[in-house]
Length: 435
Image (cartoon, rainbow, N blue to C red; front, side, top):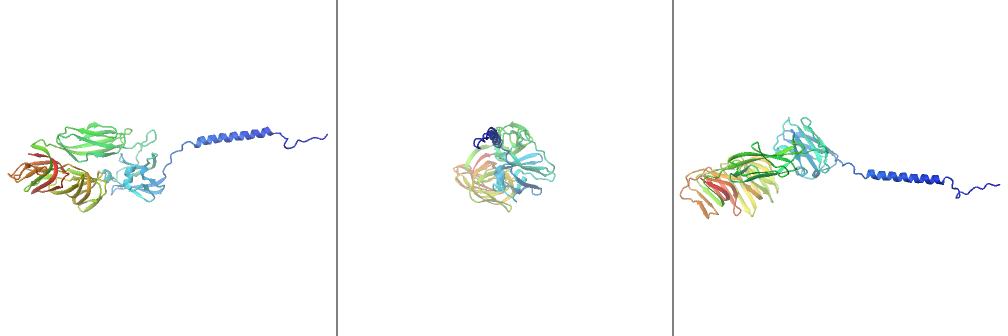
């Protein structure tokens, strides 16, 4: 009998084995796909900025230098700097760093210069210890850290891995130095960059706690004298990380003699001059126009929207001021005194002002006081643009006259000229005492 062989299409041997292999392969592929999707869909680690930053210290210039030596462009607006100077932590925010650098990007070859004398009135010495940490503020990851001068510093981290930083105090109010009367209620306040433990010290003695981000201290009954008020803000997690702010506060007594407040006043005495007290100041904020101050030949150009303070450097026995106004804006063309010059709270220069031009200023504040000693001679003292004469030319008058918080009158030009032999003051408001 002839054996019949089935055709290829009819041969079903091993079909179940092949189908089984295909199904197993499909199941494996699907399983691996699910695992891959699960793994690769998880958030990866935050990417660190990769940049080579070189640092060194110029002791003679009190300057810390940070140079971009390679790698990625650093976004300054997302970069903060922590400086540890002899155990005191200083922070430079991204906004402050952008202001120091002048633009938002830090590229290869550019050097950022941080002058500790200008920023914090701190002079760097050869024996100081200075460490720096650059932080990416967006991820809170360290870009670079190291010791620039002295021995290595210890950096303490929290359990969460973040580096605690010192609070930064700003927004000093009122400015320093400040003068008030015994009858005045005075509130000293500032802003802290973080919720901090804030303590106020008066001449080194604790007077108040004011924790949080808006520390303040109010005094309603201070006696005459000069006080040193200190605000210390501490990081709650590490109290060694701190910042401080100080005021020099002088309290005067106007309780003797006739005392009042006058507006649009004039004071003249042709035979005797007085003095403006050490530490008195004017402060203002520039608005528009060109502005500059020259002290003993050294010129400083002042940009718009900058806070300026001119503090009397010693008792001034002669000098001149001239200001003109347009509404709430002031133009200052003469301020002939020996001063300490501050810009945005940082000292710039000290000495005799030889030239000044402030094209437009607002927020003018003054603590100027003028003391005219007793001297029997012709005297004229009036208010309300001369409509109220307080002391007339005749007869001769020997009163001692004290003026406090001398402020330009908004409706007229402000003019002061005085020396050992004469006094002329016009267009001002003031508290005054006649003894």
